Image (tube, rainbow, N blue to C red):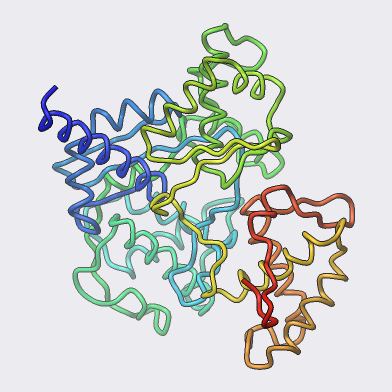
Length: 403
């Protein structure tokens, strides 16, 4: 092959690796939000579809004319570590009410290609009033209007609705606000990442059967069930279940895998597929005695940073992790004491945590960070550092600082 041919192949491989990592971080890419990346995904869509299907069993839908690419990530396990977030300065996670309204609003948006914020709110009021399980939506309450606006702004960020006249935020102050939306119902239908739509499940709306409903949404017939899988289905499921964890989780510990999954990764076929998938996606594969992880040196696939000086909870998490690394485990009371000393030592830091109960909130937020990054675990009342935590050990310098 000529030098030019080699360069073209290398450029194509680099494009594919970059797109894979971008799609892992942002499963929805639109021509409006990132035209250059969207054009690249369209150009390399065949190879990208092949990679996601072969390694993860996921579908990549690319619609050049509609202007979006959607990676349909399906998981057999419920994972609450990446919630939808309110588009406000605090970036608080969606609560149950917002998720409920998101589902109802999405259903009512299917009524037509355009609507107003008031007409849509009226439809949500009617829909919730007729539902035996969902609490009625009350536009007279400011808290309800804020939740409704958070839902609409999330859908705006996805490109599902677009305000062509007026501002969505104006509804917080007045239910009489005037906002006109254009609705992309095709893209809206792509948002649900589940093998089965809720309307396909024959289950009554009983709260006691919610777990059964979730299981039905997530079930992938392609792989059968644990009791009746063929050898081919079993091998497919092992490959997908392991590689999904690798590309989605900061670290995968051997102890957290089933015996069958560990056996798959220990086999020549499993090792080769894992190495090949990592190389094609541009990851550096790190194997340790305790587990394995994929490192993205370009931080393209990273949807959260740690350490991160920009977030108080992450700063506290790093310091508390240093204490955990130096111990055989700590209780939450001990961590509260450590957090209190941090607030005393740095009087101008962490002002949002200086009200009543601030220390408890700081520790809770810091522990959430550490759990999400796979750096700690619980053993009864103790919080213990996991092996990957050693990567973040603070080094105390001769001048009394840390690095």
